[in-house]
Length: 349
Image (cartoon, rainbow, N blue to C red; front, side):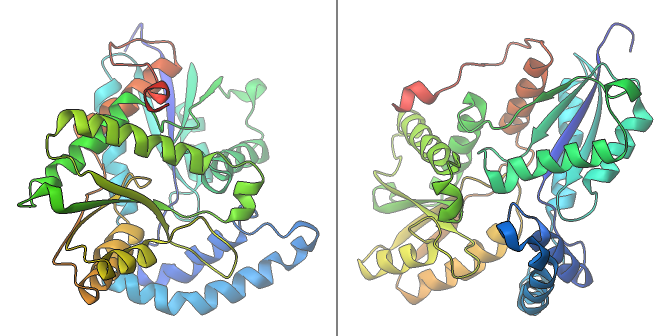
């Protein structure tokens, strides 16, 4: 591909167990991350604490995975996103796209090895598939990338190309449009949109990180505002009643509020009969959507009298979302492919 930049693209994700046997080691890797459990001066206790937590949680977590196909779908779905992204950018660059999962295969070390073998590269784009920046996800993945690359002695003097980092895309126009389109497709399943309560659900975060300045909750709120504003313009029946809550709390510490399950229970007791849950911080399906929302939250809604419960499918490889990723990658290496680039934060203010 003469004349085109040869660009490495690293897609970062959480990862997930690819079998029931992988659940406990996956959890161990998760709880060994100091950005997940910051122990400060008690860091020497991290491994025994992580082993204890992962051992205790592995059985109930494995039971949940058994109900959604005996494995996490995140690996397969992220690979599908990678393939679609390569197809989308190949007109403009010569891409070498790899996946770097934080807690299960393919690990960051595997991504580093793949790009080293693909050298020489003109540039490398680091693209965490977390729309909203957080210390616990984006920063953790980028720190692991730097650690592994340095450990492999892979730097500018040993063939490592200049890096461009995209640390969030919470207000990218195409990402917002993709969410609105997904929600709109589910709205059609309701006979009367005026009765719908639209519940935005984002992955929770310990308040200890928020108090340290983690921008995650503000970016989540911005996304919700932009989605509602654009949705109301595009759909005459866009729900007038909507709220934001958080899910996936672990442990006794204080987390962002309100919780998804408590919100569903409250709405049911208030007489809400129709509910659409939109998991806005997840770009692929995994246990948090397929089980926590589509099974656990659905069952809770039935207990409190909700008659129609729907979940917005994750963005996956939808054309608008892939177009957003394409725009992010190309602009990171100085190429304007004609996609809308202006951030939308000002619209919500």
